[in-house]
Length: 391
Image (cartoon, rainbow, N blue to C red):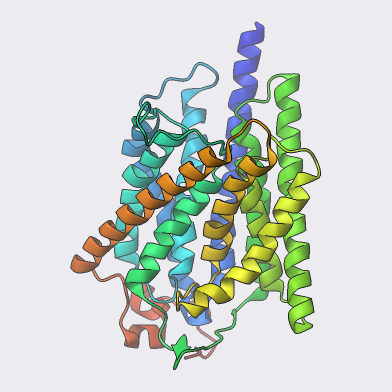
């Protein structure tokens, strides 16, 4: 067998294996969100996650991949493996958004937005960052390092979520006379399972983004990338737990898990570039940012049941800027420019599209539907029919 053929086969297998790990994040998001919402909304949350994976992936297959990369040509691996790896990413931007507007968003308008995100919005962002780059040579041209998408995926989903929350509004009864009404999670074991499925998926997310494992140098880079990814998650969990204990004398498992996810988001921009110690700092700051950001968003009555703004938007920005701070030869201003260009584009376009959708098909469920639960009004199937639904 020729060496070139061997590398082609190994890299094709690597892309397919990484894709499978990333797809584990689909049930990860689903379980995390199902555990964090009330029992009367669990079926609708699961349905939304399934529909996002289906419609966004089809939209990316038919339109989005070509928009992002210009063609299907690939000399390093099977074109089908290259597509499947990229397809595994697309739904994550909308998963981030769907969790943050759960318990009051309707399925059909969100599915319409998922199609547009999968076919045009996300592919346009990939085009100017990882892909064909139709703005090359202009003053908007982006030259940032974002290996697996702290900005391209995570803050993109976060900016879209911010636009959606501003249009949809808070859940009924979440904010009463300027005070935050605590709505507890319904199933902590599901939250824990979902977070760890996401954590495992991140190894394919970041490790697979190296793009090749068929040489000693690339194999070492993949291994270092996965190690640094894991380290940042560990540090985020520890710091978030410590913050909660010192402040409240309690260990909040939901905040610990979100701290871990915040660390994982933060490291995603540059795990291939750091030594073994920097990810501890990046992940630790990521975990702290989650704890600090949640009450700030609540202060502005930006209702986010799963903490996605704190985990994905805040840490997507932090992780991208961190590359410019800690890595020699990478410009902080280039990283900042990428964050700003993608952030402004995503927020403005998402807001406009969601505003238009909302004019024709209301995004927000009625107060009565929210009261009885989205499972009944949207799906007709309750996840826990033997339980009395909480109001």
